[in-house]
Image (spheres, rainbow, N blue to C red):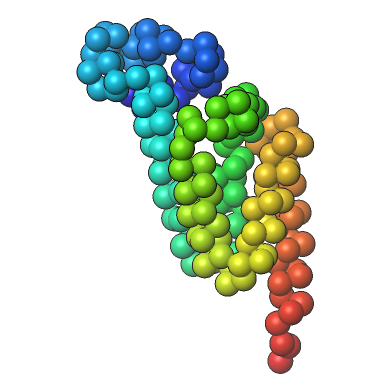
Length: 171
C-alpha cells in the first residue's frame, strides 16, 4: 500500500494526488484507504517514512558488508540513499520542502542524520562523511540519471577516500 502511494505521489505530485488516485492504484476503496489513513498528509508521511526506513536499512546492509572494499560499499550506500531519487521525485520533494516545510515534519532531519551516522561509522571521520553527504546532494541536482549519479559519486568517493588516507601515518 505505502509503496503504491509513494509511486502515485511521484507520478502526479503531492498537490494533484487525491486519496481516490491512491485508492485506485492500490485497488482498494477510498473509504478503506481513509480507514487506514485519516488524511492525505498522514498517508504521504507514512509512505515517505516507509521508503526512508527501507533506504536506511539497505544502506546499512551495504556499509556493513566487510567482505567488499569500503569504496564499493560507500558508492552503493549513496546510490541507495540518494541515487534512487534522481528525477521527478527529487524535484517534487524539494518543492514540497520549500513550499510546505511542516508537511514532512521531523522526517526531513531525522533520516539524513541516521544516514550520516552510518557513513561516519563506516569511514571513521565525521568531517569526511559530511563532505560526502553534501557532495551527493550536489551531484543529485546536477545529473539526469541514476547511472550518472553513480559515476560521479564514484569519483567523489575516490577523491575523499584518497584525502582521508593521506592523513594516515605510513609504515
